[in-house]
Image 1 (cartoon, rainbow, N blue to C red):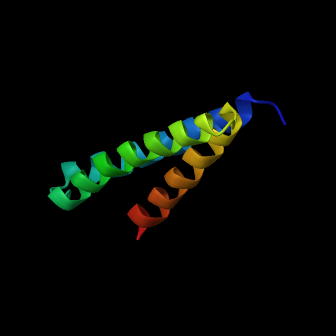
Image 2: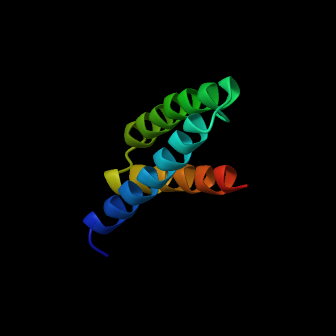
Length: 79
């Protein structure tokens, strides 16, 4: 598989999560807990990416990890 395809799907999924969160905020349903979780997830994902690279992983592993995190957000925000 080409490198750009997983990166493209990650980008599209991330845009979906951003859209879902902005709709929650605009509707007045965005809680402070959700905002805290959003920031906390980003910090944790960055730390995981750093660990993958330090352990000799490549960018594809980082993208795969981010895709799992973003997919979990789509499921959680859809509920």
